[in-house]
Length: 128
Image (cartoon, rainbow, N blue to C red; front, side, top):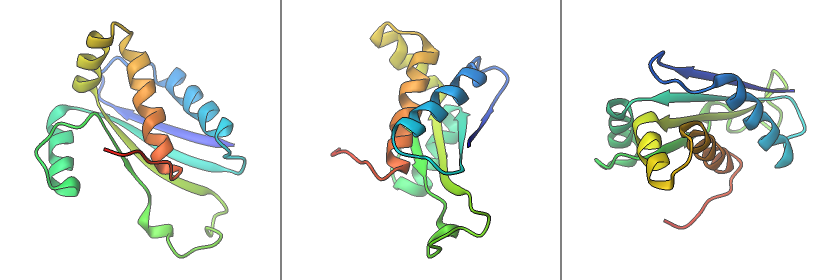
């Protein structure tokens, strides 16, 4: 079973139920067959800028970040037998802006960003 948790502010009208299902399906299609968990945080621009300064050492407003859990490094088998994939952060304001530019629904853009972040958690990266 793939467990997806979503945290967001109430004024960010993202469909959490659909997001959880889409991400679980996406991970399953990309090879996750064991019990796993991942968390998604839909955050504001201020939080995303703070996170970028802390971890990327820049002042750019990023649309998505992915973080793998450093506490499980070194384990061949996590003690609880659950694959802890990590956390995906999406900047809601940036997703809204990009959805408008692409003429798509905000939930669709958030989902694309979450899938992009999930690929990073799975070790699939791109050139910047």
